[in-house]
Every structure is written in structure tokens, then in C-alpha cells.
Length: 338
Image 1: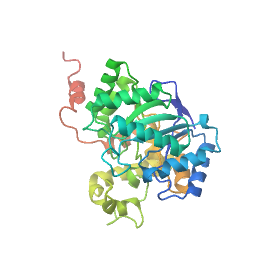
Image 2: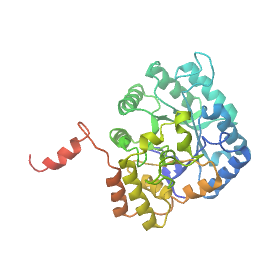
Image 3: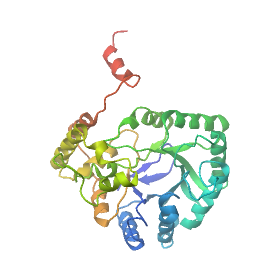
Image 4: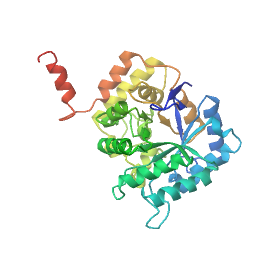
């Protein structure tokens, strides 16, 4: 596995990040250790978790595994924002909740520092100055090495960057957005902001909850039993059958399956490789409930789709774009007329 610099920092991370949301939820502790070991065997060094994943269980499993490792060999990322208790201050990005959150994450992971501490989403109720100054203090205290954001809109990310610059505070070094062949609106503003400001992009849900895994075909009338999509409705997940059972999805999947067959890869591997070749992307976050899923996802690195294959996937996944996001197209049509 190759390594890439995270944004404009000197920190090198493996081109595939291991997401650990399933650890302790669908995956036992024993199997989680095996998955972590296998990921590391392939050269992986970037592990992403969050305090809210099974209320800290994921962090605890990562921490138990780390006890038998050389801590400095790994880039461990976690997040803060969502409820971790029933109290009024057990949620959000206030100074109180962030400080409490980082201390608890350090305890669960069993480490003296967190490599990448990310705010899990925007908090409209807390002044941005309060959040960013607190994160800056954590870096100055040595509890956190780098800071990042997840699930921000374009204006929110730019505002945070500009404020940190103005105040001389530590700046976000990366963004963790949803980004995949079925979610390309991320390109409207977020990728541009990241490229312009030197932030790395570490996309979550590269397979859109399983839609890009190769399990779905247009002749289906419902999702396979026990698949993530089959329980998405009752669990409140966003990748529901009703949302994606349409011609746009099926036409994209037809192209994905054709490209994957040409490349001699699985649809999932082709979908993740498309991300690895997308502008601004540092390391897609792969998740795995089983060793079989991990092995399949690891196969997305170490090769590349051709330019023709990438272009076909781009065209099949292209979204209808209206003003002001069609300005680039207008500029192209009028180029040379000035």
C-alpha cells in the first residue's frame, strides 16, 4: 500500500484508511483484532474511529489492540460532537464537551495523544470561536497532533479555515465527507475548498452502504436479506432501497459492473479505485464487518483504472447541475470569446 501526505502536513498516511464503526457492533472483539492485523500486514497505518461508535466500544477495541503494537507506527483518528450521555452538555462542540470528549477518548484508546481529532459535524449552537480555540489549545497541550472536520458544508468549512487563519490558531488539515459514485455533490464546493486550502480528503462510505458492492442488480424488487440496505429503513440509515431504486442508480451500476469486469476486479474495488483517482482525495475510508469484506476492499489499491474507464464512470455518475454550479460549463463554452 502506498502512502500519501495528509493535506499540506508532513504526516504520511496509507492510501486506504480503516474505518472501525463496525467494531464491537457487527464484529466481535476477536474478529476486530484479526481485521486490524490483516490491514496492517498490507501496509495500512491509518485507523479512523469516533467516540459515538457504539458509545465508545470501537475506541476501546482499537485501544486494546494498540497495547500490543508500537503506538507511534499508527495514525489514529477519532471524533467528537454527537451525544455520549443524557445530560445537556453531553453533546455538541462546546469547550466543556470537547475537553470531556478528548479525555474520555484518550482513556478508551489507552494513549497519551490522538493523531487526528475531528469535529464530527457542525454545531449551530456553539460559537465557532469557542470550538476552534479549544481545538487549538488541545494541540498546544500535546493531547492532539492535528485537527480535522467531518460533514461540513462548503461555507462552514471555509469560515472555519478563515477564522483560524485570522486568529493564528491551528487549522483543519483534512475533511471527512461522504463521497462516492452515488454522492458526487461533494464536488460542488467541498473538494474545491479542500484543494484551494490544502486540506486532505478522507471520504466515508465509498460504497454507499453497499450499493456499489456488486450485490444489487436492476432485476431485484427488494434488497437481499440481512444486507445493510435491508435494515436501512428501520435503523434510519440514509441509503434506503426507496431512495436509490431508480434508473440513475441502475444505469450507473451497469457501467460500474462493465468497467469492473474489464479491469478484472470486483465492482467494490473499481468504485474505491475511482475514489483513489479522484482529485483531492487522500485516503478513502474502508469498513469491514468480516475478513472477507476487508480482503475485497484491500484489493482496490495497487492498480489503477484506465482514463477511459474513469471517464465512463464519471459520465454515468454525473449529476444534473444547475446555477451556480454550472458556471464552469458556461465558462468553457464562452472561452476565447472575450
